[in-house]
Image 1 (cartoon, rainbow, N blue to C red):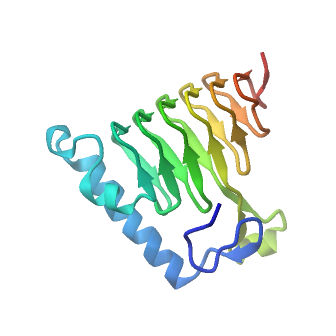
Image 2: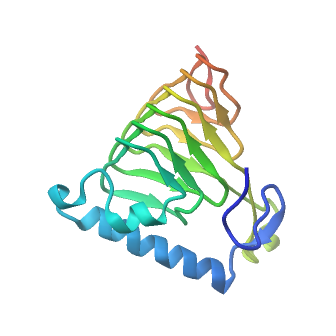
Image 3: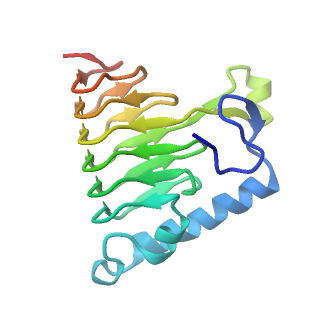
Length: 181
């Protein structure tokens, strides 16, 4: 997996406070604003500016509004994926969502791991850890997927779960933190 952000290498500390990254975030804000404010009949499955921003958007994929992403360029969505309203993807690293996966309302996916030292955090130091979601996964509403997590094909994440560890193929997790059920 490669990171599409300039100067950002997965797992390495970098400053998120650069002009170049701010320009990319501004571009993403404009695209998600357009997507979220368009008439649904005109927007279709994904607004044109958002479609052009994403790393990949598969056939018959649907992103409901409102939607938010940090950059968009690191988001790769497979065929038939459905993101319900209020999903947020903070894609400082690559985010892969496999074919036919379904994300409930308000699902959040985070790739940014901010520095644990307050002074370094104030300097904007963070690292980017990719998130991979396999095919045919169901993620219930308001679940949070933390940086570096992989969720295997066919897995189920219960609503409200906070996923901080990998979930195996066909696994089922629930709770805070998420545990196998």
